[in-house]
Image (cartoon, rainbow, N blue to C red; front, side, top):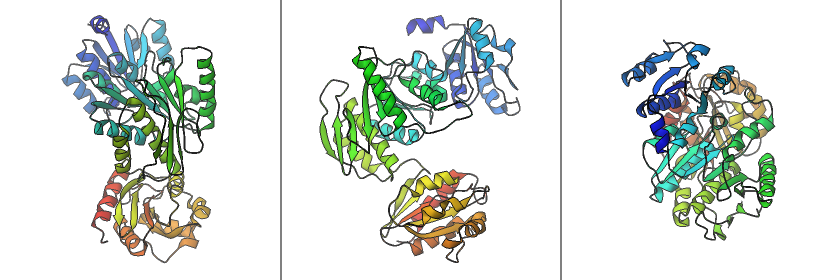
Length: 467
């Protein structure tokens, strides 16, 4: 560690991609004594504020509007931001010239001594990492939480933490070399990023790179309910039993009992594992009462519980935090209850697939707020889904007419001109035990600047509503 920092003095580094992570990496390398240059495909006009910020700290060597071979050569280190594909030919040219090419997460890990919990997956990453951060904070553990959400990973190298919890995308995992988490988690795998990965096998390889450098004392937690991950876990177990230096596998499941790991069946959780310190964790727990609905969220809660237990956090702290957690803003966020009616904010559900996931998360009567700025959505695919358990569909915003036209069977003769009118209607028609769900399936631009502002407004309107 010390030697690496000594060697970095006045060596030449290039940071490619000037998003939040790229800027943080450039700043960090500059403070470490590197001569830093930056490159981005966007124009200098688009990057004006970023370039000004970098210039103020002494980074003025930049290339904009593309990546040229001349600018990439004669560098000792290239750090690539997550959004930039490492398969670009320019990086192979740089490697052949003797330059090391890594990702920002790898840079962070090389300069941090914090024990790592690293998590990836297609869905649920931010929810689970945020929940873990809250559990560790409740236990009084100084923890860095970042990566693909919030703070860039490299910022964990600025000070010493008792633990670091990182959300990692497959893009970030492409750029690791020595990155070594004490606990690694893969939540699930569903088709995603088909523009970057040719098939499921390539996507699985990218995600499971998270455990590439793990060893026998480490833990790899996998979702037993995901067929691809279940098969991968069995393969890893076989390799471990054969004496290979690979991590111990702990499965988690909300569908079946697992041999080693954690299961959540009905209202009971079964733990079969040992802590990192070696103590026996075998026990049965009464399941928490999560505010986030759906089997996918039970899975997120379960793996967070398992991680915290093996880390050594007391179960009372864990369960209390699980019960209090209301989720991520605008993502099936529990907003509150009025007269026995629960309100959920899924303003981020700006497409029909997201609406389907949100509706499927509940088994109680729904009052669904659907509308906003129509992007040409096919609302008819919701028809069969809404036939069971719908109290009322409330169309709102500019899309209200289109919602009624495509879903005439749910027309109650009311169209809300705006979100406030939609909430007022929901409060008046919802009955005790119902759920009022904002899952608009549309953009927000008819009334708000973005989905966050729409979610903020929904939250405020619910709190102002009369019981």
